[in-house]
Amino acid sequence: MEILNDPSSSIYTETLEKQIIFINNRLNTINNRYLNDMCGLSGTKSMIANHLNKGPAQNLVQNFFKTNNICSNCNCKRGENNIRQLERAHCNRYSRLDLLVLALEDLYIDENTPIPCGKILNKFIEKHKLCPIYTLCNICHNKYDNHT
Ligand SMILES: [Zn+2]
Image (cartoon, rainbow, N blue to C red; front, side, top):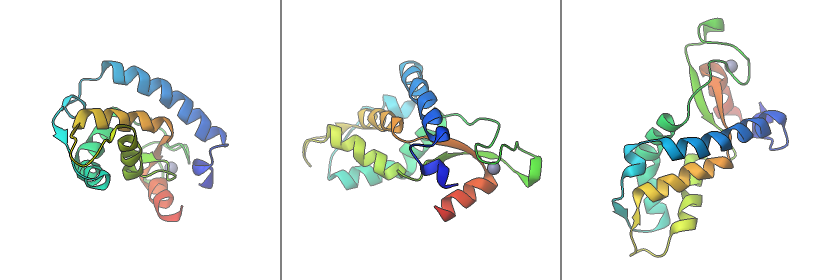
């Protein structure tokens, strides 16, 4: 499954190419409560990134990106070979927290200057132009996260 982490592999480049178009279109049309939330956050970069990581950023990714109905690795569908479900799998080169930190790098001024939460999350979605999200079945997803 190393191929999923190889930026020169065709699955990596093709997934990313489609994803960039998808992000541009969806950011223009989506109405999402996390992206609309303009409440300001202040503190260190890592405090803000950790605050957003588990709840808002995770829920936003679930809502923003869709899954395909076939696993990118084994090409199976739900119900085949004991597959329970198809899941979104972040390319392991970047974690969700890494992408939040990258987003903050672009917006951060200092510890006392609040940044609107929705602006950070918008930038965070943009940072997914660096990081393909694959559709994997629960079995491949488990292997991927434990062995790469
Ligand atoms: Zn699979």
